[in-house]
Structures are given as structure tokens and as C-alpha cells.
Length: 102
Image (tube, rainbow, N blue to C red; front, side, top):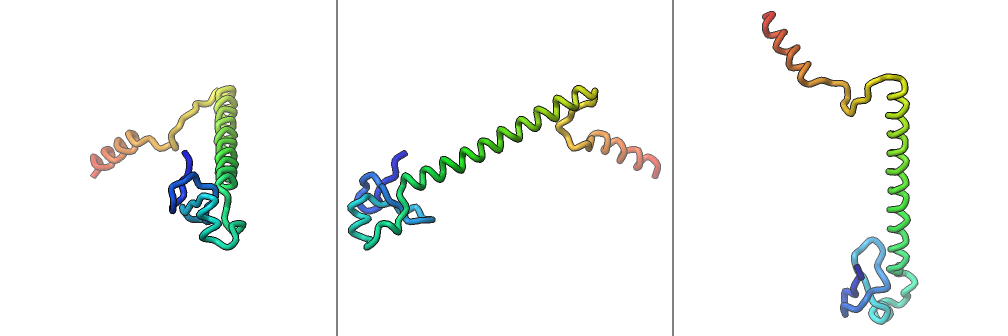
């Protein structure tokens, strides 16, 4: 998805940091005395790409750790459950038993 200049709608090459204001080369030069103070759209895209890559690596690492945990748990003969150990049905039965005693 190509970013567009907010003034002339041409393809943007500059951006004001922490905003969604994009400018083409000509409009940036016309409106700012020093375009080096603006971020290049390519620079912003590279930062986003790096951030997404790091997140994907984190997710992959978490999945590998989970697979290893499940594999080790299975070797020990233990049951593997996605729950937190609370059995809601069991808790309801306990509540009914308490009501019967009263």
C-alpha cells in the first residue's frame, strides 16, 4: 500500500515522525526548510518490518517451547491440559453438596 502526499496526493517519500502526515519530495521541500528532519517513508517501512520480524521470532520461540513442554510431559506419562486446573463442573457439584447439608 503506497502512502500518498497529504497536499498533492502524489506518492509520498517523507513523513512527520509520530503522525500520519506524508509528503512527496516537492511538497516536503516547499513546506519544510530542512527535509532531513522528516523521516523517509522507506525508513519507517524498514522499522515496521524489523518490529514484525522480531514479533514473529518471539511467537515461533514460544511455540517451540510449548511443543517441547508438551513432548516432555507426554514422555513422563502426565496428562497435558490447556486448562488452569479448575474444573467448573466439579465446582458446581461442590456447591450443590453444600446446599444439601444446610
